Amino acid sequence: MTTKHLSTPQSSRGFTLIEIMVVMVILGLLVAVVAPNIMGRSDQAKVTVAETQLTNISKALDIYRLDNSHYPSTQQGLEALSSKPTGSQSQKTGARTVI
Image (tube, rainbow, N blue to C red; front, side, top):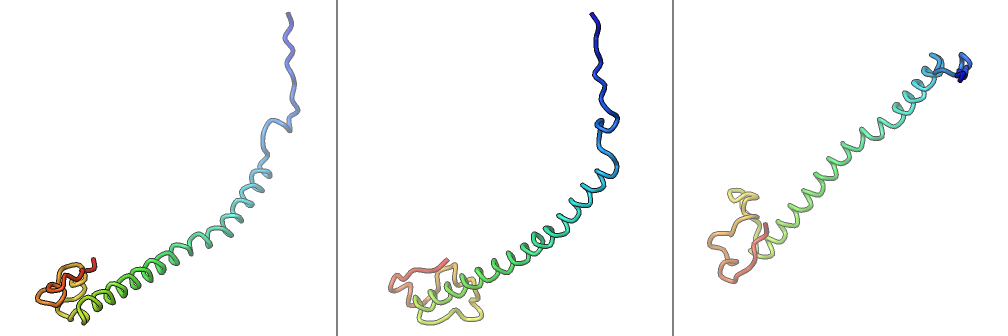
């Protein structure tokens, strides 16, 4: 039994250097176009988180004022938003404390 070897032309055995270089240039261009869009999103996300946190603190202060008829003093600070006020009207009336 005779085995025939299929001969393949020299040009179809692999990629040429030019083909690889063209693919690398195309990938480089894609990265150059897409990367700045992705990198800029992290900064925007940080701004959005900061805005949301400030809004939450503002609402917590407003609720504190509704419950206690005044905003927390400078000495009490923002900690007053997460602990029960001492000697205020909210203890007598059973008003809620914002966390």
